[in-house]
Image (cartoon, rainbow, N blue to C red):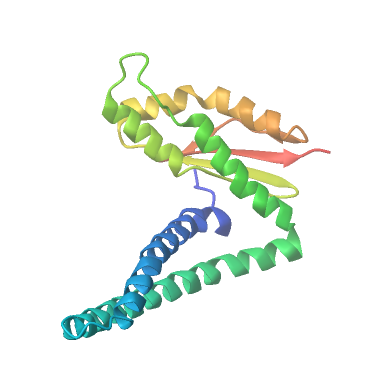
Length: 198
């Protein structure tokens, strides 16, 4: 069976999340560095002047590098997000784009296994949760697609396969105006599609 193609939103969802995370972490590092750099610039003690100038130059170089990486991350993010936003505005709606992000995060929270209640192995739970974190739902006016990558571990796969019907009901209840197919497996992924009926 030929594997269906992934939408641009599905293909870039995790990359966008990673770029946002990297940018925020770098900003959190950048702010205190700038404060320390300013403090060293204002150092008036003659004994510490040489040290302050050296550290100020060093921190300035680090800050400039961080600025470059932040600009690169944000630019890449914009290159990935802007085409999707334009496509949504023209062919769909921005509300569906926001809904896709929000519901993807909610479904991940719904499916993540927090505790080992039945003696399940830690590795199996970790592999299960790793796959669930990669799952994404793409909501469109006429169609909804939910995709989850299956882990390589057989036991972890079993956890996801056993939750198929619960997940289908959860998605169906959120989008009652769509009719959903059964989950279909394509190699290492599970996919369910909904078509708008009203």
